Image (tube, rainbow, N blue to C red; front, side, top):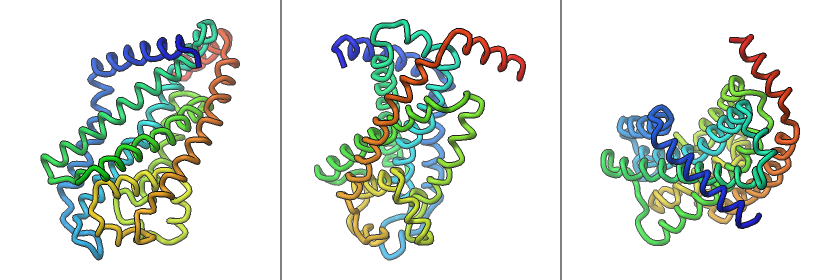
Length: 280
């Protein structure tokens, strides 16, 4: 990717970030997830089975992973589909370096949004409900690399999904059902050992389970490992699975986005607008 593409992408991303910060409706969507996590954690008083770690800490670590997952696999695809319907991909075809710069801008927007929301959740939880924070340099390093690798695993995948979704009206319905299923089966809101073994095995294929496990290793004490399926944090496996999803996401995202941009035309855009107007 050329230096001009990076520069144009970073400039576009900075503009989109300013628009986000000035849009109360979009900001409220991210803040509502933090509020829900704090409310749930505030009402849970039990400990993790076999440990003295509060169950609320597991829930907060799980919500932290889900926030990263949601930004990449829910918000980003909806964003891409909406902008495709508005003709953004069509305009990019006539812009030198349009697709690379566009991807850089979206990555910047998603990463800053995800990291900002994660920081807000952890700091607010620590202040209001005695939530967990990393206890030493090694834990902070683990938090950093799990967050980075987790975003790399889901952002390209979200871009690939956004390139093939039909339209904004169907996008949310198509995305949310599997995402909610993963939220319930990945050990984010209760110990994964309480789930049937086949469910655990299915969840272990997807990145959310490993993102949550990696964040628990950074935020919870070592005694909480007793509540893990393997009795350990399995950090090498966390890195391996998230890296595999990163590679798969990039292999899918680039050709699918290029294909979506090539297929765009003025007649297709007009036909979609006419169909949407008739449906309304």
